[in-house]
Image (cartoon, rainbow, N blue to C red):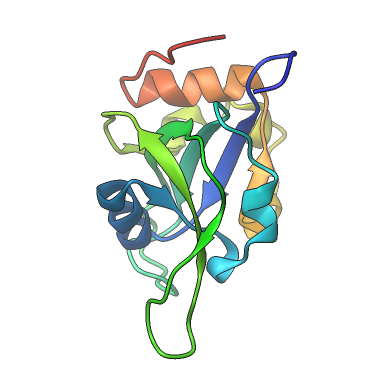
Length: 147
């Protein structure tokens, strides 16, 4: 957390992957790359948006699937399979409901401009404003613990 307060981040991954991370107390982004995770600081807020249930599907899920606070600790590498050793970061996930993005489309700065808002999500991790984070949290039934 900086002197200006926590950072607010939106990560993008299929819901099945997000749920695995939630259960394990970690996050992983951008096919396991370390560099995006190193941008996060302890105390930063992280919300996950899932365009689909499974990677590569076009099932129209389009939901926020997790929200939490980046925990203390370094970015760590794990072995998931031969040849796949992704990097992860610890997260204190908050109890939250998964919710569709549709009711929020006109209320989020991220999406209010209309057009192809999904284009910004292609990077897998992007900063968002505190107001957007608060609206996402509220829709998920979460009261953020600070700021």
